[in-house]
Amino acid sequence: MEPVISPWIIYWVCVAGAVRDVAMIALIISLITTLVVGIGSFLEGDELLKKIAHISLLVGCVSAVFVIFIPSKDTLLAMLAMQYITPDNIQMVQGNVVEFIRQIIEAVQNGK
Image (tube, rainbow, N blue to C red; front, side):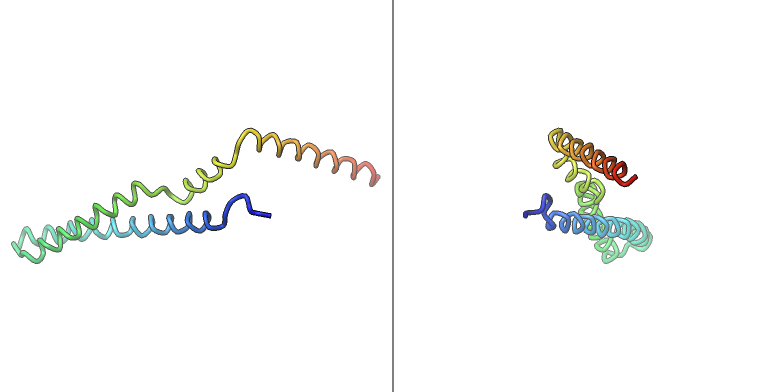
């Protein structure tokens, strides 16, 4: 029997969450580095510090794009669930639950 949801989908959801987390950390570090090095290059006029500030700003921009466009792990899982939750599936499960409860009631009544 083939699974309803491929295990690979769950794996890629976790990978996307990890990539987003790393991008968030890189964004924070990049912003701090840009701020500190940018102030230092402004005060000292050092070209190397200016180059480092520009590179750090570029890394921050790329990280911000990743953070913005990669949804969180919870959002990805919710999107996946919404793909499989349909009115037909809900009716099918509802019928199974009613039948299951009926069986439990019969079992309890027969047990008395």
